[in-house]
Length: 381
Image 1: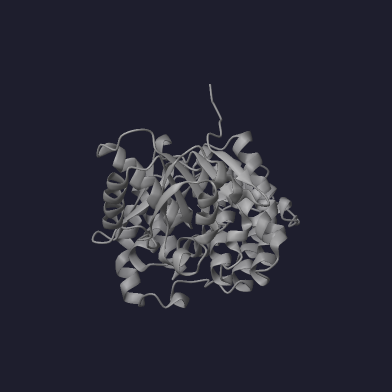
Image 2: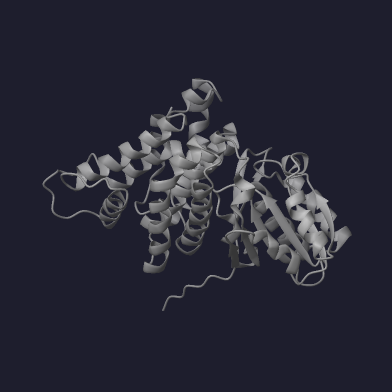
């Protein structure tokens, strides 16, 4: 027997932020990053809370790749303030931080059931509807994905007005993160008809609207569509999990501070090729592993139907590479300028071990060996 449910209540569309006026909580802790406060974007949140006569405080110490010490300071702030609810405002780092802060505060003795309302300002992580949170240990240079049903937000508010000021580079990185979430969940060993439907729709939207949102930040229709796609992809991977694309990207972020969505995007062509055994099949072959046909289906969703199965999958790889070039995302690690060749190759064995141990690896459609992971990292240079 299997089950499928969506536990987070989702508010979306025009004026979705008005939900904050009517939330059934009196005392609110806002968790966000300095940019949201300094840019004035926070006013879009606080003005609604003021209209709803809510009390609130703002915790703004979130940084990218949330480190353990920032989570600890957030727990202290929560235990001092004793809120009824948390409103997490920002990208994946803010929402992931809020999840971890709430989770560990409960373990540290916070009383009552604290609601979590996630308000994403980027269209990328899908964290507003998932039971995942990724925390970084800078000393160990490791990212630790936390996975628990108790991490799920109570509500998600999708208002694309919050994404208008997102720079084009971040639109590109987060948009490819959406695409990677959807594609990895689609070929995951835990994929179901329910998660597949969500993933396919997210991919279809990316194919139509990601480049539009990148080229024109004021294209509100494209922004709204990508905001919904991010949530759909989050629902898909929350149900089906992910694969080694994410396992390997987590290590690139922890070691070399490559943005998560960007790391995913750079790895994706290599992962599609690896999972498809693309260089090991003959073109006349009749039977392929299940994931090969699933990649072929996605290619068709994107309008990439080709001569046969293998050339269709090659067209999918080429489409991903085309998107990276069009949106100025590096194709290789050497192009990022984040490290020297010797630094990178020296780190590969440890990154491979950590990727194999990552919680996303068991649901990858092809079971990887350490040598497989090392070879992909080497190609990525």
